[in-house]
Amino acid sequence: MNIKILGAGCPKCKMLEKNVSTALGNLNIEADVEKVTDINEIMKYEVMMTPALVINGTVKSTGRVYSPKELEKILQTQ
Image (cartoon, rainbow, N blue to C red):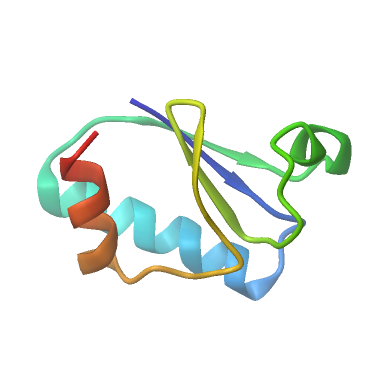
């Protein structure tokens, strides 16, 4: 599984990254997690709000910080 967190490094971006890590740990799932801060790379995903969550190349959310429990539900369907 490939997970990208798109954002410039704001507190919400850091919280989403932490929550993704927590959810992966809770589910005992291994994934490549990448933080993308380059605005040109972010624009390739056509997101207008950050943080954005991309799983296996598909944008799952923009402008929202999911809790670890919400992320667990999302990750289990991937």
